[in-house]
Length: 180
Image 1 (tube, rainbow, N blue to C red):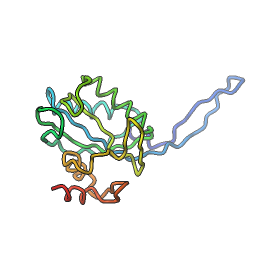
Image 2 (image 1 turned 60 degrees about the vertical axis):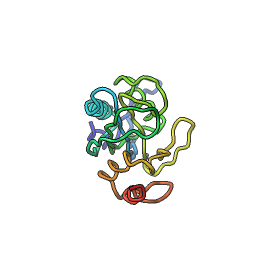
Image 3 (image 1 turned 45 degrees about the vertical axis):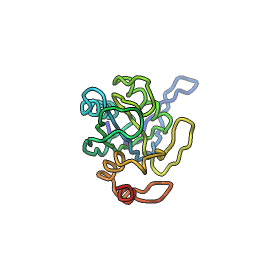
Image 4 (image 1 turned 90 degrees about the vertical axis):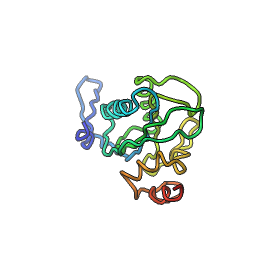
């Protein structure tokens, strides 16, 4: 499916005489980084299933995957350790729609509403969306706490150490060094 996203999309429109008119529209692919975490059930399997669901989406092409990291929870109630990773993907899906798609995958994989920063079957976060800055009530890009969380920076640094935080302009590897 990833190769198909590289080509122009063919859209069909019908004119008033029901003749088919074809035209092409080149979709602009954006590099996106997403963080994944799980600390309930089979954590590693939950992450693998989430990656598979994301990769199966026709509008998303996963390009990079970090290793899986065992991490201690940050904030929230007492809970089990997490398994975390970061994926790099390309998509033309707008951030709010991508967030909606991620939330649907979380629910499909068994996530239930709960306490903030509490245990979860799977958590999918948009960390970076190209150089875009989004400050909506339900979505902050770059992720508002990514620069202070080793469980995000370590796997992100593994796959893309030189990318820069769009607000601070500091590379991911430098951000990781600051918190170690």
